[in-house]
Length: 142
Length: 98
Image 1 (cartoon, rainbow over the protein chains, first blue to last red):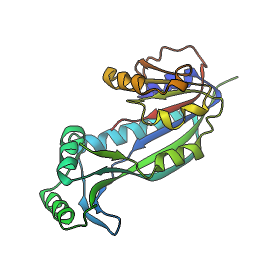
Image 2: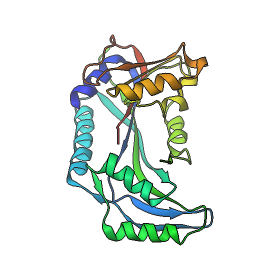
Image 3: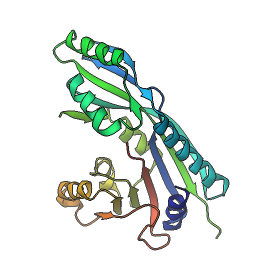
């Protein structure tokens, strides 16, 4: 990853901008949501591979900052929702796309299915992903 | 499967507070099918999206609006070996996949 940051710095002009946009594991909430009500039904489990990936990304950016390649200008977390029409669709997505880094306990799965089934006709299920956006300025010797 | 990503557009709103795309030469690393690209590309001077997923890049190219054909391009490339000359871009977006 540090090599990629070196390459990004190479192709950017001095004083250019790097926007780093990434998910951060933090037991993302699962919600049953309708126009009338939003109800948290449980939390995702953070798996070791996902946590290791987060740490590797954090360390790479810290290394690049320490080398004087970039200077951090601004940073904040924000929610990014993944929304499905049914719990089955959500579970399928998690199995296909996220199973290496997050998991869902059986109790949470049941609670989500139940809350959705008992909810209003427009009820959906969603995962509130924690995202981090950071703006870096490129530093170069002129 | 019906999946909506970021229906409240939190990402797009924050991105525009963090970056001024006006007349910039932009490199997007990890562009995938171009979901984020279409949120800002119109404002740029040029946009180059790269990804390692050839199928996703095919979708992005097919979805490219006709008015962006002359300034938005996609390429199969990896971030550790960018096929571009030095100081070619003003702004880079590093979108970590998940």
